[in-house]
Length: 281
Image (cartoon, rainbow, N blue to C red; front, side, top):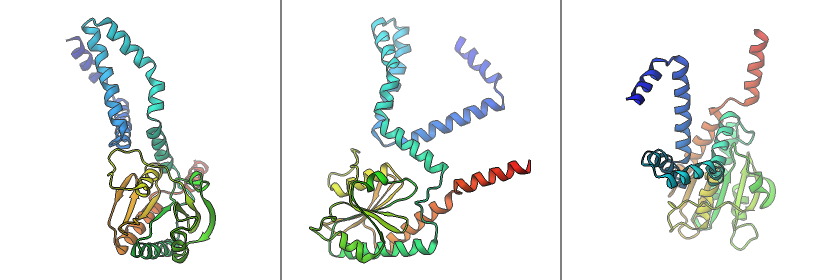
């Protein structure tokens, strides 16, 4: 009864700012959920919620030792959560950074976008026809300098002929990923982090797992050509879609890159706008 009275009292004391506070906190929790859903973090979060639920129950039932253990577990749990959720925290911070800033790595000129994608798709078409394995990463707002440093830097114009030559079997660079930054081939033979997701089919090889891994940690677009079947796949935001035709691949790449280009106003333009408003006050 006392709890019900407290709830009614809290409701009566609510104002506009209280509702705004609830809405903001609800949105934050929703965004956290969307970032960790379908990951191992969900199971860990369920375990933490179970511990929080058991603490008052053990207190009511006078389970002194259990209550003492659970309370100590929560006390040292903050540091443990940071360690356990490190990949998810990093992913969340990168997501916030991409939302707030527009990176110079995003292609802005539509003619350049069409030219670069046409060259990539032409190369992928030839590689798929000959069943030559390939892994092409198109950098977006998230910088991939740490990945680029693992390979051989090139800084070359994107052409279908050069991409095809990079992935020729038994050549020095064919076994890694090629990174495309803006309208240039930044590096080839790069190593990508493998995904640790348990939901990935065991039928997929290292090349596909690496593509999913880098897409989980960045907003890059990754094209994979299977050396066994010649099938073309695309990894975006931790998801892999397969069996692309060249027309479908070109269409989806153009749409994703152009939508990201138009989605946010560059941060420097935001600052200029804010300064202009301040001058007019």
